[in-house]
Every structure is written in structure tokens, then in C-alpha cells.
Length: 214
Image (cartoon, rainbow, N blue to C red; front, side, top):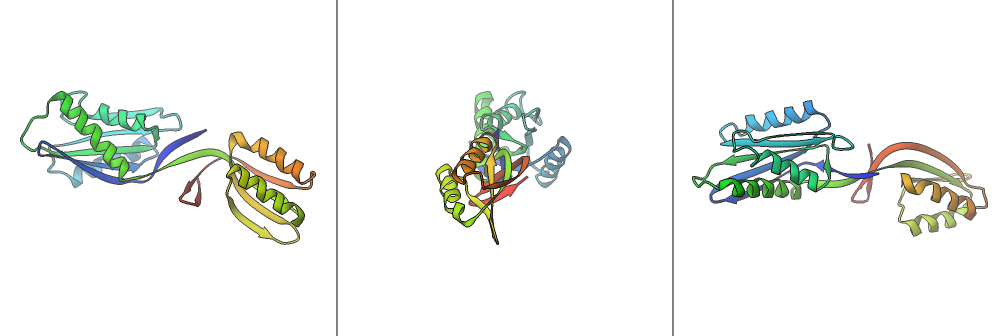
């Protein structure tokens, strides 16, 4: 299982017929957190024409909410939410602040503007893929180390940490569906001498080359 989250929020801005649309995106993990974020943006941009919002929370995007904040129904909040869902984003909220520029955009124009604004907000954010899996600590003797490193390299699994003593302990983060095959391959390559410790059911991601465990 893998899905995308906003790791670091950001801001994007577009201008349509002199109206400014400022999109602010932030990670959230509950409805309360999302509402707090939305209210903070309403206070920050208290003099704006509209502060429309959308958020999605949950492993299966089970909590979804949106608001047009005075724009014609269905022209702001829903298109914003559709952008988050279309990008397969989880646990994130977006607020699009509009400063009216004097020219009406029409229904289609509003839908396009709010959608483009959220896309700009996501582009200004850091979006990463969060993966369900295990933290494996593999203990091998020095003869088995080269074989282990080869197997990990072959599968594109980076080493998170290594400890060298009488045996070498190598720590890796592995996607749930790849764990069984890796254990079997390492056991075979080391003639059953490798020792495993497994922490199951966690989520992890790599930010650049740095591992992050959730």
C-alpha cells in the first residue's frame, strides 16, 4: 500500500482577469486540524473576497469536505477537492483566497481558476509517497555482507543504518509486498545464516535520500 501526502505545505498564486487566487496547502491529520488551518487563513486574509477550502483526511480518503465560501455553488470547493483527489493526495487541506479583480469569470471560469490555483499550491509544496511496510534488521557474518548488499542493490532498497561488531546488522525499510521475497532471497544467499528482526505495519517515505518513518 502506498499513497501521496503533503510533507511540507506551500503556496501558489495565479491571476485570472485581474482576480488574484492564492492557494495555501498544508498537511492535516483530522477534521479539527483542517478547520483550525482554514480559520487561520480566514483571519490572515480577512479582507479577501472569498476563502474557499477543501480537505481530505484518512488512509482511504474517507473524510472529505469542501466549501465555496460565497462563490456560486459547485464552482470552488468541489473543483478544489477534485484536484486533491485526482492527484491521490491524502491528509491535506487547501485554502484558495480570492481577491476580486472587477471582472466576472462565469461558472466555467471559476471552476478552472480554483482548480489551477490548487495545482499551483501543490507545485509549491513537497509531496511525497508514503509506503506501508516493515523495518528489517538483518544480521549477517562478514562473508554474507557482500551478498546482502548485492541483493539490496538489485532491488533498489537503500540501507538506512549499519552496525559492525562480531556480526553486521543492516537496517532497511521494505514495502509490505516485498518483505517475504527479500527474506527468502537473503536466507538462500547466506545459506540460512542471516538473522532477522522485523517491525511490521509502519509507514515510511524517503525525502530525497533521507528516510522518514511515520
